[in-house]
Image (tube, rainbow, N blue to C red):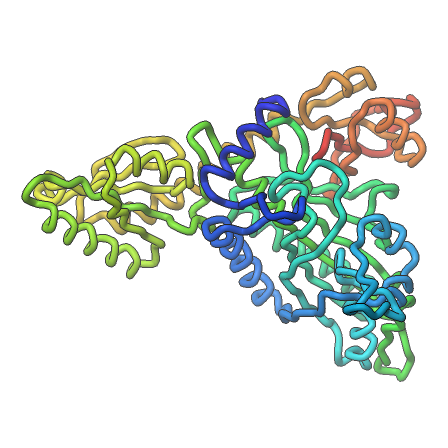
Length: 469
């Protein structure tokens, strides 16, 4: 594992050299998405849009500004965000009668409209999502993708006739998260957050945490069960089949650009990024190996290969820059392109191609007529191996602790026995310096006679803890 300073230096260096983001914009924490970084993020968004279409969510786009009176309708919500919001108080020289804020998240923007859209049981379930920028005045040290003030954000919001249907939605959200994690090769820990750390206004919150190379946890997504908390505040009612008016039950599922920070941290190495094939802007880079007197013929064959790869569903790029091949290798390794193909005069003559995997560095010679099929298999193998490696890292860095001192000395995730009492849980956090991620969603068996790590009373559950970003 890296210490925090080593990781921070490595992480910032990789982002700069791979040209994923530019933090020189004159507002701290509001960074510029550069072309390569934006392509990665839009590929992630594409996978999420595919999942939303599969699960019959409709995409919307709500305004950026929220009136203060609507924001204030849900008191718990404002308590959770009131110190983080950006306020708009003037239009030109005119002071506004009602202050406006830049959305920190969109419950209070959407739900006044939901009260107009939902009228009868036939309107349910209502399932929508949007991918937008949200704004939070982050006071801690900012870091690209991980802690920023303008956040690229996915959020799905749903309305249901009853609690049971909302619970089915939560299960669907977990399934979506699992499918997406396979695409990103990011195994995760799913925990039910403790009461003191659930989302403002939620009945309960599920957190999605990634193990980072420093041993810390990075939350990339969360799923919330609201029951009727927001619908009562915003008067979102429906008429059932018997003519009775009832409050809807609601859920949300949110994921931020932190997911890209996780991809960088989990899969990167000393050479640079290692992109999972599903989100790599360029999946295969072709490097022509030129020879005097044969350059045009070699380039022609390389261009034909690029067209063939693109026609077979790969995102391929031919690097024709007039620089040494070694410099090209270096550049594309930094950017994490999954596969490099080298094609020179001898390869063309022998009807083969030299293929190099970014994750292992392994170089293999493949017959030209078998290239497409072999490349498809290699792509699958890269994804499988990246996921397995990250999964082993996660599992091997969960340490069972029986005392507060053991927690304090841990450099990874920890698992404890806990009585389930909130006061005791908060004291465990205060005394250990760790954050309680929560209790496992899929319940884990307690040992016989298991005692709480702090109060020594009978344990009610396992709980996960970690230092966090």
